[in-house]
Length: 69
Image (cartoon, rainbow, N blue to C red; front, top):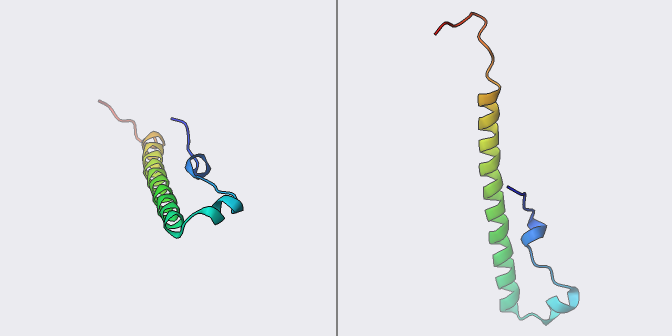
C-alpha cells in the first residue's frame, strides 16, 4: 500500500483565488480539509496500532528452557 500525505489530497488556493471565494465556500473548504485531516489521522492510528502489534508478535523472545511439543 502506498502512503498518502495530507498534501496529496488537500486543495490549495492562491491568495487571489481565496479572495474570490464566498464566505460559504471558505467554510466548506475548511470543513472538508478538517474532515480529510481527521480521516488521514485515523488511518495512520490504525496503521500504527497494527504495525506495533505485528512487531510484538515477530519479536517474541525464545524461551530460555527448551520447549518440547
